[in-house]
Length: 241
Image (cartoon, rainbow, N blue to C red):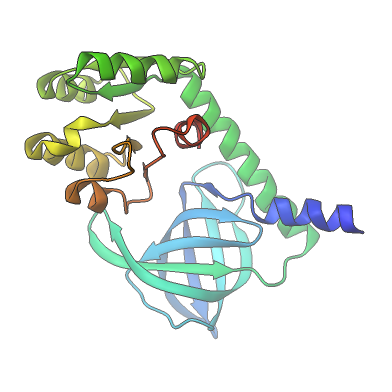
């Protein structure tokens, strides 16, 4: 019994970002369409323009941007927060799934596993781009990333970074930055690509964990990760997840 419960708890907490949409209904009335940010057997995070109060029960129809069939779930609004989306500020809703059938839990678990496999496959094919002007620091970052078996390419100038990110022949799994967070012009460009292209961005902070104001704002986006640079395990987590 304890082992089965532990397995179920681990599956419920296995949350992963997924591309898709969720259509919400409340008491049979259509509430609106939301973007699916992530999901697990324990709940989902969605974003859109329509606000709801915590505690309200909702019915969700979830479509993944894959071949999975539409999933029908009942949930409860746990938290409501402002959400910075591509088109400006919106609403983020944390939805819990208090009751799931075994089939529903298996369907969510399978969708998560397929998403992880697709993401791992993309990561294997696509390199990371390191934008770091200081040669010694750039080489150290590249070396650390390569030690995880991840391909990487480094650039030291803003012009080269823009050229690489705009090159239609090369796709990058993400962008890694460190000291450029102190350069306003560079951060404007990074901010643009991160938001407009939904580019996964890794911001490596100072050794004491400090970030510039612009970097702190950017770090609030779901596609941005900020590991503790001195922690190898945290860096690997940010690169892989």
